[in-house]
Length: 113
Ligand code: FES
Image 1 (cartoon, rainbow, N blue to C red):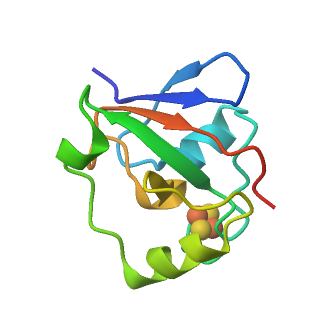
Image 2: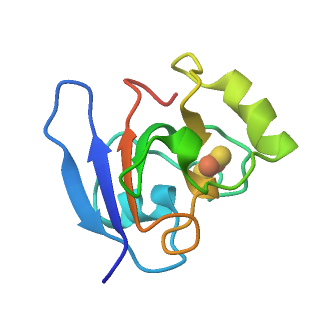
């Protein structure tokens, strides 16, 4: 089974896509034409335009899931997001399909820049 990512736009219909193993939430959005993720820095945790709010991971609350710890870079970048940071905030480029999750649901912020 391919990993699955569901992108939820504010006021929009959730978009569900299959992700290549190893590909990030950011890259998968770009490859599938999901609007709402920019990914300006190409995944280096240096732009915060891949900001997402993680809602579910493998069917459970993100707090109970096995997402990787945030790096200092990610933590700092999340203080510079266009939409205010929340507890569920992560950089989409730092979450890899198949490695960190098999099935993830992310809410997209209203703006990335
Ligand atoms: Fe730039 Fe994720 S793509 S921080």
